[in-house]
Length: 487
Length: 126
Image 1 (cartoon, chains in turn green, brown):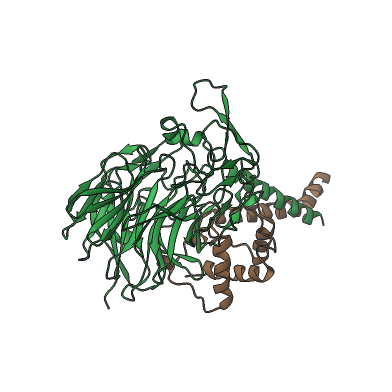
Image 2: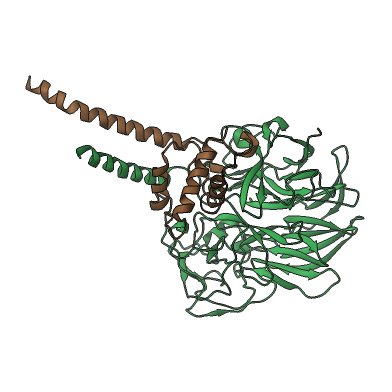
């Protein structure tokens, strides 16, 4: 009896200890690297399932973000022209030659990041992030002639214009939200855009009714340390909301999948209520899927423990942002409550529909990006999705005990089972620069070649992250190619 | 003499106390060490047992996001956690520290059995 009490006491003590321990432990993000000098490449540092091999076909790229192929199977890559850390370079469309060298096809304006590319009937279609002048969809001929198809997309905030893909005569693209969870806050000042665009905020696609929940913060736009401001959802910084206030919806809107007819015509809404729909791909049975970067633990309304998502897109549906994560309500749920904050309240007074169930849920802060479906037995795993995981940005997005992402996962979309496919070897997961090895860094896109026998991986390169800053390294991007070994 | 007898009486209690603290500390330290068991590193998981296959689906819905592939992420690694099944069930039902609890309306008793079977299979994947 005496010892039972002692054991119970020790159990609760250890529980308390573990709890306290989590709170006081310093975060361990994959970007927390020191003394990086040079990116080295060694394919033997990467683990793949038995029967597969990896090689690299290009290196020394600056912030590469997407890949596509022409009719002959020649790969073309884009360099983003912008990276977190407010690093600006020239966006570029490059052809990758057989010897690994690149040839410039076209350059873009200082309005990156170029987030994605697709090729269709002799032209390239690119999603231009639009951090400075708004998002755009641009069309570039093989000769390098540029035509703007869509402009003025709401991309001045945290997330940008993404995609695109072409299906059934339409060009589909993703539009990210301005904020983490609906409220413009001091995290946006840290990102650098609040001062540039103080009136910018999220725009719903359809009318929404608010609950009148407001968030106080120190005013980041004044020098007075005692100046406090209050901000409501879908409103500019420093503007309060009222109960039952209706915010008008309009197109283009934040957190959505939109489309335009390739033959010309008005923009149409496909789906909304998504935080940052980054990757778009069509399954072998012609269904549209997207990857969504889910909430961070930051800003006025931090949300904890929210995994990234793979969604099948149903036309017209609302997917839950900013009150749901992966189809689950975050309101009053301990699962999503930040350890340093109160339980979450609903921003919206009513919801357009019950959010759908996700196709798969990934690691918290994994940053799932570009992906593609295997459609050939020559590669295997036919019908499964291969997803690039850029990797965490801890400590800026919250806490973690170990690096998350930095790999290629494969997903069975029928069961939602996510499995590693290409990872760095070692006792722990992480980017090569963190592991001090020479494998993968930050995979940002995955695309099969037209014959379907090779999976190409766009590796953004090295990016160091600490509490105060983000430091991407130029000329560290790599293009990898994975194939099945010949028997 | 009196003092000697007193020491003798306390000693067994102290030994148990030290053993318990040692056990808990070892458990704590072990869970902090990542153990990688995923497909490219250890080969495919044996899913001939239907319970394991079904448990994998439950794991994906509720656990994967904080413990990707059973490794450390937002939460600690599970693959190297030697705690017996009943303790794991207790922790899932009641939470621990920052880990939320999952009641029967989220993970049913049947699903919990499958989940524990999957976690055991993953942990032993060689």
